[in-house]
Length: 105
Image 1: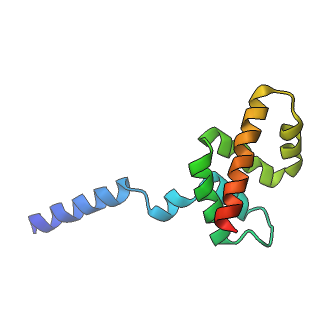
Image 2: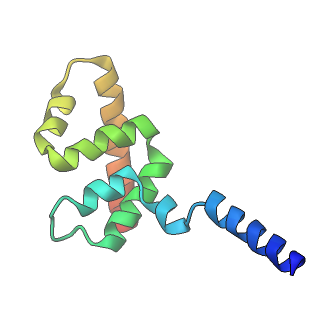
């Protein structure tokens, strides 16, 4: 009985400490994509875009890019900005978009 209790306790501790794969896969880009209301924003498409984003953009870049789903005009403002940081971001974002289009369709 003692051995069974210790086994259950160990399993419960590991189950609590290790996040579920589904939770880990839901990134900020995927959530923004799914909530965008666009017909092309299927769960598979949004997961694919998130995967490409994780390989192409920093966490900070992904946060900024996720805002474009809610406010597309913000993307235009960043693209036309004279700030050097926006220019560097836009180059990374454009490369991400090209990769996502090639990878995800």
